[in-house]
Length: 461
Image 1 (spheres, rainbow, N blue to C red):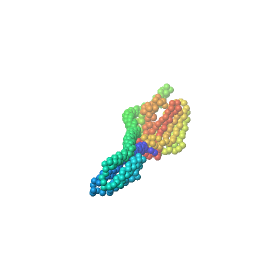
Image 2 (image 1 turned 120 degrees about the vertical axis):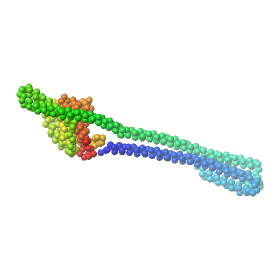
Image 3 (image 1 turned 45 degrees about the vertical axis):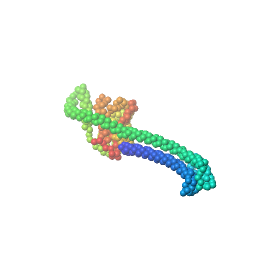
Image 4 (image 1 turned 180 degrees about the vertical axis):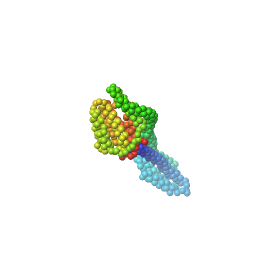
């Protein structure tokens, strides 16, 4: 058995879990996107810093070596051979390290050109060392110009080496822009998902909470207003019926005395007609009092299959006299907590209505009992269903909304309280009555009652 409130809580719990999961996924994706963007920015900074640092190191090594050459023979305290050898070794080590660390073909090509130019520079330096006077004699002007040209070419190649890294910078910049665009789209998608989730939540709240509450409130207000009117009408009817009953009893007593003293045939017919009308009036008073002052319901566990067979045996002779065939379909035992007398009144009213629908024609009535699982009073429950089905002319569709209204009837001698009393008695049992009717095919009334094992369903006070 599923409690609607529990089902509703499960739905909202699942929806909130999905919403939290969606938010968690969006946050996780945003975190990874931000981390990738941060990593890309760090790579950009590292590449830019590395390119600038390497180019600066190479220029510094070239400048130091070139400066040592220009100072040859000008500073007696400086050992030019040692200084030049150190500067040369520094430049050679830088080239060897860069060639080993080169990752891209373009970078390796510029380094190979740079190495070739450095070797050319070293060959010129070896020529200076092997000349007469060696490193103790200052360089001639032509030699200085030659070394200046070589140093300028090396500096230009250093710029080319730094420019090789621009490609990496552009690629990383494009990757960074793609990450930013992806993050923007992700944020937009997450916002759309959140808005959609909020709309779904609001829709579910309205569908499962607000709308049923509004419908229930409207139904309760309508029912309350109807009950207030019926209560006032019932009080008035009870007073009027009570006042009518006393003189009615006196009239019946005098009529009984008059019947014994009348001998003329015409007078006897008049007395009989008066007696019939008095019986009808007494029945109306009894129905009005029964509706205005219903008896207390005394519930007890009853096995309905046996009860229904006993009820069918009670009404069968009356129906057979009216040429109405009665059938009973009650095989499986079903127990329910009922007031046997009141349920007899309910079923008797429904059977007589079905019999009266045939008029003077023969017909067929089926009394059945079965178990169903339906929504009863805003929750799903196991119910025992007592049904009365006839193959009569059916009830016109325009009469369906007013069928259980008090004092509404299509019978010339009816009070319009029979089905109203039936509905009230069934309601006092914690059940409900529903019907289906097809013109020229028949009518079926179902009385749904909580089973004896359904302890949570109790009739209203």
